[in-house]
Image 1 (cartoon, helix red, strand yellow):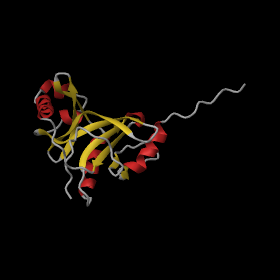
Image 2 (cartoon, rainbow, N blue to C red):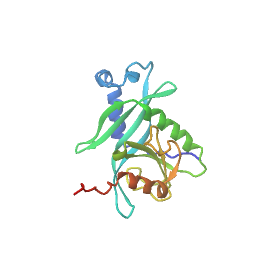
Image 3 (spheres, helix red, strand yellow):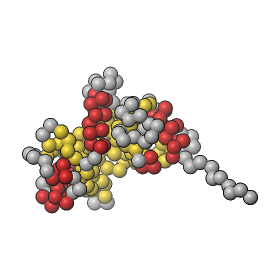
Image 4 (cartoon, rainbow, N blue to C red):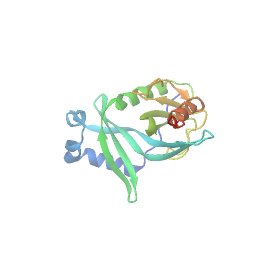
Length: 194
């Protein structure tokens, strides 16, 4: 089944195209692979980036849309990514970056495209664990900018994943959320000996 990629807001895409067309923005970016890329660079695979703000004691998650991420392709491969963010004045370009999450995102998307069930692709960030996942949402018609992970959705941790969590292994939200809850919940404070 094909993987559904929600359409990015047109103003978000325009800000990335403007940044790609700006020699100053590309030159000042900390992305040698983008600066050294030969040929035209194009933004592809727009994914909404949601942040897992907290997990309630009942195990429900609270998420918010942080922006849209575009992979920047030059030739046959993605060389960088571009983030956008919503400001009071509308969508704005945030930054170019590179690193292991670029290839890991491509790998997870290819993996998801082979699944039998259709999913909508999103990204879910867990800042407390320095973790990014490909969030495969079961409702392909949903607005990619809204919603929360459903128990039957899949989360695919991207490499590098936190210790003890396998990268590129799909997990049902109902299975992985308790693990994340345990990891981000502070333990009891130990009292000092009297």
